[in-house]
Length: 265
Image (cartoon, rainbow, N blue to C red; front, side, top):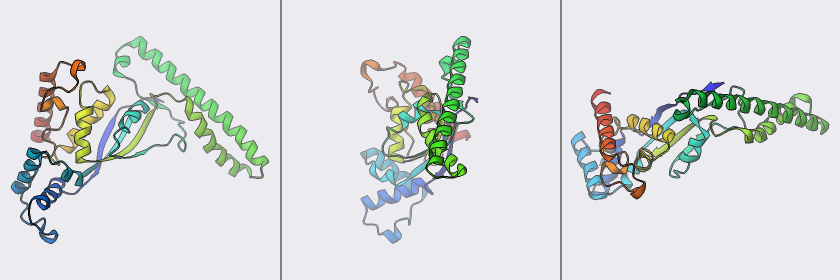
């Protein structure tokens, strides 16, 4: 039981993503044939096709490359936000099938920075964990008796009751409860994700995940993600009166990030 550290890993991706996208672009703009589609796609030719897509705003070819991430140490609050990105695939650790005997949680930085608030937060999490496990046990014992009365032996009744207990007891778990997921997005969806979630106005947790995802995909597709990040990197802030007012600092942050990732690994 305790606080958990965020972890984002790239676990799979399209083989040679930029060449795959360039092949799709080549088909769009030439009389190429499928059997020779990859012929002549040198690194320079690939970069040229990707630049052409960027210049004309033709985004559909970049949907042919995708990346799959393993994410853990994030809260259910994060889960509620990230699943709003509908052009993506998600597999999330189930609170119905997985009993949280070892209860982990995410501590927001603003709470972490204030000792009294942190102590209060941890006390609340400990109490939530205790009540969850008590409720699970009460429900499991009650359901086991019911299923045995219906003719099941104790082992089968207990197994069936356990899942039923988890299903209802999870309702008392807090948003801070740690979860794990596998998420896949194509490059077009990723660029949109970065535009929205790398923004300074995005919630801190999903912004941290987005930044780490950008660091992971950038070396594999530097041309595709050359301008990736919040929208203010390539134009005016779209937030209007809600603008953070830190466009210069944001541009410097992502310029330095990309230079570090691409030049130093």
